[in-house]
Amino acid sequence: MTDVSIILVSWNAKTYLEECLHSLRQASGSLSREVIVVDNGSTDGSPEMISERFPEVILIQNGTNLGFARANNIGIRVATGKYICLVNSDVNVPPACLPAMYRYMEQNPEIGLLGPRMLGADGSLRRSTMRFPTIWHCFLRATALDTLFAGSGMFGGYLMFDFRCDRISDVDVLNGWFWIARRKALETVGRLDERFFMYGEDIDWCRSFHNEGWRVVYFPEAEAVHYGGASSANAPARFYVEMQRANLLYWKKYHGPISVFVYWLMVWLNGATRAVGYGLVYLLIASARAHARFEIGRNLASLRWLMGISPVIEA
Image 1 (cartoon, rainbow, N blue to C red):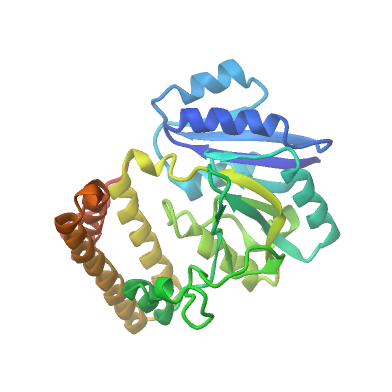
Image 2 (cartoon, rainbow, N blue to C red):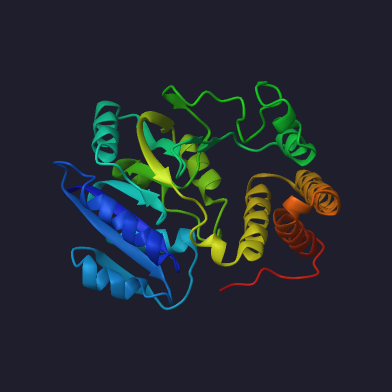
């Protein structure tokens, strides 16, 4: 059995994908590994680049964009590794990262899912964990109280603005940019829920690990660089609406109709508040108009979808 199977899902992210594959060539140390790229119908030359420059990579080409969960499941089905590593295509993996994660998983057999520390392109620390969302957390996000009182445990919210990122910690959710999962755990947890097109599957999958008795652990002794938004940047408003759709799907999966309605109100309040707030920014701060226009556009798109005015447009 291969030590680690590394699965990347890509959609029109050629430049990032090439850098990621270059980094993975040096990232496994003495571990045996296989790299599987599941391409979601890219038209930017990504498949040709892989075939030409990375012949060792197992390339699976989908004729269309099947989404994050379904495409990763395709990769998981053909993976042979003792551990399954799901990595976003816009991640640069340093040489010491995978060996450190592998060793820690070997030393702690009760861990089902492990995630490293996330760094931005500038080397700054980025958030990569969440709490399971609650109505209280959604209210904090909608009113920005989690930002105003970022260091408070009560007001930290599901984005965990109060979380210390310098220690190994059991967490509710590891964001789905970089996971290493134990194959034995997958036999009980199962694969990703394919009803989630993109976003939301990380919260849902982590919940499944918890429900099956596996630990979900943040591991800052390994780290990688995440550029962020490689695929979603191709259609930011569409992917923002998709994120709202995924979060609502998650809520419907685990909560009753009254809770779903209250959640819907919180999401609507969040979108309306931000659309109005960025509208004022646009009017008052000329230097911030480009960003304000972007935020207004995607929040209005979210509100139109919530009101049933426009659907999610699939690629």
